[in-house]
Amino acid sequence: MGKRVDTEVYAPASGSEGFGAVHEVEVIATVQSINQKKKTITLRGPWHTETFDLSSDIAAYKLKAGDTVHAVMISATAVELTPTAK
Image 1 (cartoon, rainbow, N blue to C red):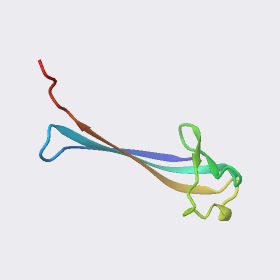
Image 2: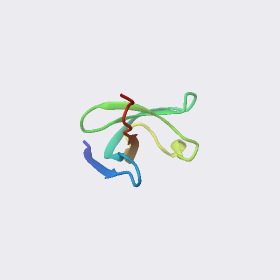
Image 3: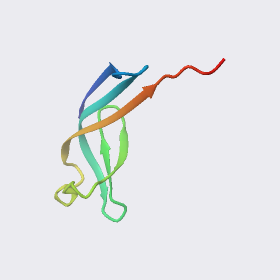
């Protein structure tokens, strides 16, 4: 069970020699386990199983193993290119 959608966006940085990139992964996954002591959740998606840290914003106490969840993970990168001295 599961569905995964990857989205990537690249944009030139304004006023500099560089770019920014954002990678978003949206997945429908199954909860494998929740570790309240370590504040982690293990999800099984369509490609593999992975453990994530839980923030205090997430009401993980409402979840249990076997539940289906919709998760969105976002990572961003900024790169600036500068010439080196000769």
